[in-house]
Image 1 (cartoon, one colour):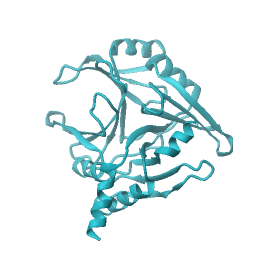
Image 2 (cartoon, helix red, strand yellow):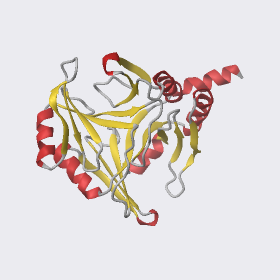
Image 3 (tube, rainbow, N blue to C red):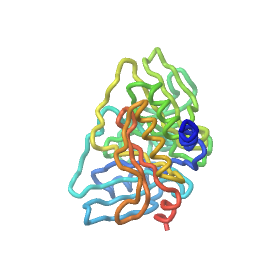
Length: 284
């Protein structure tokens, strides 16, 4: 039994994992598409309308969904605004010219919440802006990268527990840990590849804050897997140890047929694991 168990627990490291997209809700799909196109230089990759379920989706990013991480914007009919909550932090875009994007955002009536300049205690040039729905985007000045959509930042109540969960349940690596006692926070950068070539999950712990509100705006991150059933098994075992829970048992989505499993981490953040082959079929 122990052997089978260790075999199961090794699966996430052997699996073919990749961040696919991040899902969140917006109050006006066309407005957001326009803003991301004009200000960030993203491309609209596909759009679908599901009138029976009363919602529309748009997928946007800096490259094709077969290789790049993208945003999946969801518009629910008749809902024009959402509560972002205190737990969601920001998305980040890597660019060779932060000031240029900031000027575009300003010209389009966007909100610049931090002007371009060096990061506290460092040399990197960064800025912060908000999109029309109030989602924060950090802009980071870096050289060329295959993945400009480079971070999703979420706040957690126990960083060590969160790191352990994403390592064990999802097979991610802790790429680096940044301690900032003078500003009372610690960050763990988690991912499947190095920070400068891929998207990372930035987990932030603020001293003495153990709980955050989730709101109803940010939804989930989707990650590819070769086997949703094996992956779901691992998540169940890790959740018993560290917290978290399966919210949708592994299996095909009715009407679409794509196999998925979804779950919450110990802080209540949702992840959906999607079958890699089924995902490629969806793109056809």
